[in-house]
Image 1: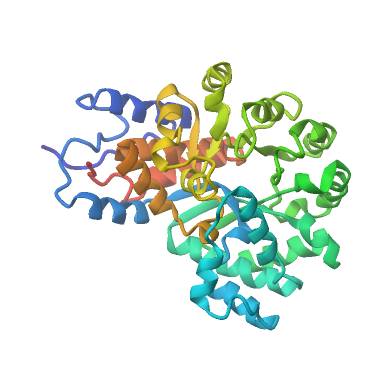
Image 2: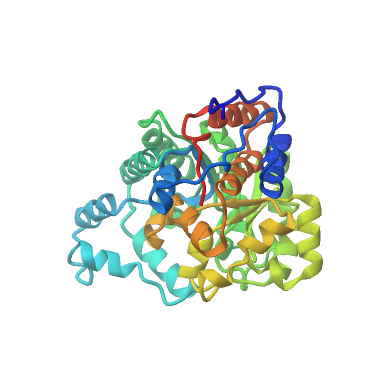
Length: 386
């Protein structure tokens, strides 16, 4: 057998590329003229080899909160800078602080952590630490949420805060991080409109879109209709957390009044068959975060997560970590969970990665260039098999 890996045709559209991987999965003996079928030999090294491959293959993330991704050693430095917390005397107790009873407890812990982010230098410091962590995982492109609204009350300005974050991110050249400010639904539509107006001044600093996170039950998407309309007029892309803590209606609310380009989480779309059909037909991307949903008790166990059902139905699923340090997860662990609990194959993992590129807010030419770069990476075409 000729083991040489053919070149990926540079003119092949990203949509067609994804389709080819899906066809390979359905017809494992059929070869593509463009992309080598990577599932024709057994991987003798098993899961250990796949874990190594998950680490080395180039990746993207689209649902990633900067403040929830601060490496523990960096967060510990910030806690010590501000005289610590008597309930968190050491690193082990800090890790214990990130064990959540439910989604409400998670939000409480999030607020506690943010109490140690007080100066612009803190944001530059932790942003660099986050970028270096991403670099070490070969996560090459990220669209990251940043909840600037939560820091207005301590006197930090939106523009200067984003400038500080960009300064820290730019110290790491091998990772590209675009920013998607979270307008924070809990602070209301008026606050969201104020923050949005301030974003025009820093749009050139890689601010590509806006989103809303927070308490879905108390602040439904509909109240942010005008804010999202204005954001589109300003040239921002849009996403919204929906179907995480609230039900399928919150997803419809994000789709209809807000006209979002992506859905954050979308876990509870499974409660509405018509919604699932719409998502499959429209290919509206879903930013799924399986291990996060287990940690916050959105689902009771990983086995109950709908990610496999969504994928098999043809929804455009992307895989993300959400708040990796707070949840103690990583992209490698997300892929391992998909493999061990749902039987996702390496080719299906490749589809998920390409979905992430396709669902990104990058312009079409950048998407295709990134897909070409990823599929040309030596790790991409390794012969991997469950």
